[in-house]
Image 1 (tube, rainbow, N blue to C red):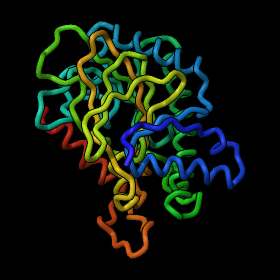
Image 2 (image 1 turned 180 degrees about the horizontal axis):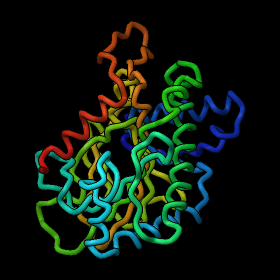
Image 3 (image 1 turned 60 degrees about the vertical axis):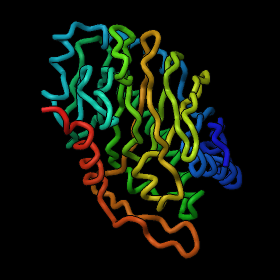
Image 4 (image 1 turned 90 degrees about the vertical axis):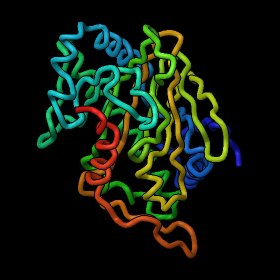
Length: 301
């Protein structure tokens, strides 16, 4: 089994013939079975949009603490808003993470309200980038369906109102704490994560049965990984791989899009292999996400 992180061009997944889509789906499926991580190019997201998002992220985290606390997750609720240093502990056996973050969800009627910093144009920019990432996620799910042997549109009606989160992250190099991670070793909660990084090193991946390996930045590529929910949905055919972020030598910014299914979508294992029996009982997307968030934030008041 290879522990390399493959680079996969998904242009034909978006624009190709059925045979070409199946070919890309097979390449993604191999990555999902082996490392659980892969880079994607040909995703269709304008590089200028991504540069603008990173500029906006730096502007947010440079705000005075009082301004960031005004939109804090503890005030806003529903996993929206600003999260300060030490609030999260992704590795429950380690010290709290040395990072700050900002979370936003879908902008739609009936959804919990987002909180926005007082920065001109910030809201529209983030809403636009959120939509771009959701489109990439939809393409990846068509590939997952093809690879798992179900209809190409299997996931469509489970992601009509997805519990997706766009998360801006800042890992500060100042005031290092030798034993505190940037982000502790963990697996992600949802189906798939689409990550953009600014070039500063720090992300490491630990493939099953292997040691920690670096996941360097590849220009104009996203690094993606399978989350625990899709591993469960695939009946453990796909692997959700532990990863972490080391304390960086200089300030590090990343932008992660976490794609979870609809709140009422039933996550029931797909029997992709002959003779399979389900490893998990059915659960709704909302119940599964609630369990995971409680584990992450349970150490805080």
